[in-house]
Image (cartoon, rainbow, N blue to C red):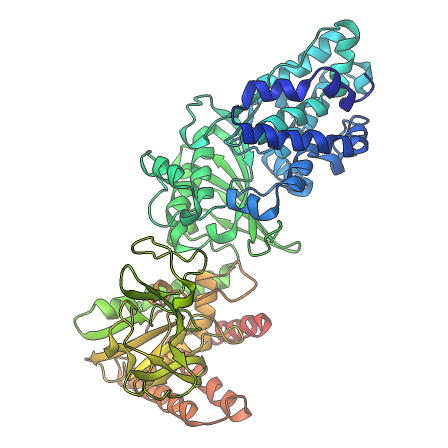
Length: 636
């Protein structure tokens, strides 16, 4: 028995593992594919046995995981929320949580509660082996005695744990562990021919219902990334019937795993995860941010950007330490790393002040400006709820931009064309592709004149860019209250050159749900009108406020959501001087609405004057004005 492949064949290891943990035939068939691929990977597997040192062997971190990824395509793995983790990320997280062979990790337990084929665990084992080499004063594995070799394997069994719902992944993880320990195993086999690896603590179970009561010094991992609508229904039922603190609203799978990971920790234990950066400021992640704040010291947040196959996902590395004492949590200093060069520190207490948003890219100047805007001025939502104003804020028609609809013969209603499967969301029946229609037209269509109304297809700042026509009499389509579509501000979801893009239309015209309609019906302050509010919304100050409050961790301007518009600080002019400033803003907005060319120096000059008026009205000091202009210019 010279290499790991010979050992697998001779001892029927894979077949044994399958018999221990695989029940369903399709899982067995899948593992047979992996066995077939092992032959093709013989050189790779053999090379892994030649060096256990984790620094020199990083290219072969997860041999069986690599084979698994080759067989299971990206689309299938994405549906499971499975993304296997690179060596650089694994090693970075282990370093940051302090799982180092120079420390006494032989007495500390580590677990990955979504372990997959074991990327984190096998790298941790390599470090644990190096720790034992120091304990036994050995430079090479070949110098280990029988007793020392057995002790190392027992140490791995006692201190390294994994959980995964996927039985195939658990078998692969067992194989990976055996591969890493194989040179130590060969030493024991010299003395004991019948020695077999123990079954390591890789538990094939549903982590959500795991009854594991042991606490751990370290929790690591790359939890599954599935939004609530993509989580299998039986898993959602389990989550919603359990006592999770973070299951409210539109949760994501990974936030449940963060909560579980923290609960698995001993006091003062460390958690290291790589998760989507949606955790930082998205309103739907508020509950998990509060949970983190209330149970841990946030030791480090490192923004990595996209790290996996799906480049839509941008990631952070999150390092937490479990802490019972509130005063220690609040005094904790969070290390912030943003890219390779930017890094700074913030006090954890600030997060409570930021309504539990992890605004990791805020410096001291940003904090001062945001505190001023948040504490000195009412939010738009305050005006909406006030008896002194009647203000409506609504999405447009619930319809895709292209205006495609499909008729359900069972419901006898139209609905927007589904993005995926052609099934009715009301009755769940299959839809006939031949009944697809387009209800947005370039021009008036003969015979439909009475049904067609203007439809704003796209806008720029202060301008309606593209006007089409929409059929407003398709039963089943949610056109919203038609009263909102006249004499109102229109706000686009997407920015324009990293600035909020809004305009005003006094005429009747519908929009899609990609736009928001803000209509001021009544105001006890004459200056709170459409022109003034449009000037505030399109100002550089509000764009700065928005990106710093809701997207400061992004390189791109985030999508504008309706709940964020409600958070806009709106200055209510009270003194004669303030009213005069507000009227000047409205006058200059009127100029921009009536010019034909928006990129001229004249337009830029008018916008600059609006910005300066807004700064004066909001009492922004000159040094802060210059900082805001510099930030926004560099963003562009």
